[in-house]
Image (tube, rainbow, N blue to C red):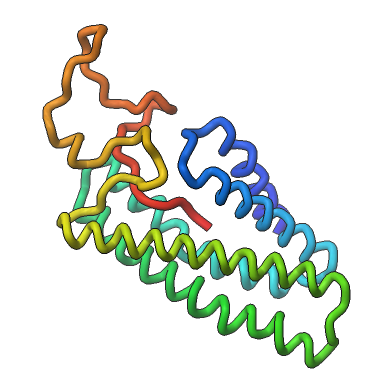
Length: 200
């Protein structure tokens, strides 16, 4: 539980030094909500609900990272396959299981059992905020999937103006002012060509 909290704190700080993306504010809100939920659930002994939320969120995240690695390695078919599996798992867990199983329990069943109390409102408002973020990211995933079907492959990350798409990588590189070809995007030495929306 504490390791997951440390992970979200590291994401919170690293987003200030990473590539600036269009969804910076949304990711910032997500990290704040995640940190608040983990801390709040731990302090208020709501660890069982917190652990279920973590399991649902972590179930699909590794597939997104694997799809990114496949894209960086220029394995387009593997990238597309992993992204489709990621999208299906993301949408089924975060728009299916999360609201039906967890939100239903915390909002309605707990109301009947113990009634609302001050921390109940805070906890459930944070869980609802998380659901709004899930809906937004699901929209992005569906949009990327529709574009991929139309183009035949996953395109560049919609959130970034810096990274280039696989289409641009396939074209011959143009020489820069210094006379050499560059295949990195200038950040941490990664090859350009990142994909789609980030985690949790």
